[in-house]
Length: 85
Figure 1: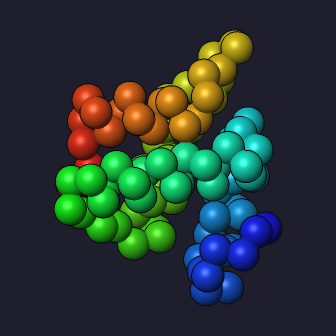
Figure 2: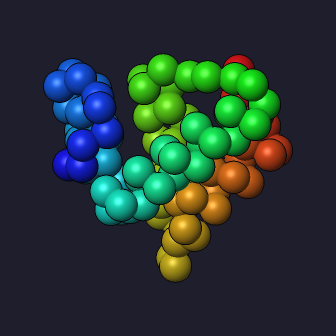
C-alpha cells in the first residue's frame, strides 16, 4: 500500500475495505484524493474512517454492475448529488 502518511490502523482499515470490493487499490486512492479535493473546495474535511466509508458506499452502489463505472467518477457523482456531512 502506498505511503499516504496514514497510521497503521488507518492503513489496515483501508486494506480490509478495499478487499471487499472489485476496485483495485489505485482506484481507491485516486477516489480518496478526489474526495479530499471536493471537500477542500467546500472548505470541509473528513477523517480517514469517513473517507473510507463514503468511498465504500460508492463502491457498493456500482460494484456489482458490469461493466462497472470508474470509482473516481462515482465519488464525484455521489458528492455532487448528495454531498458529505
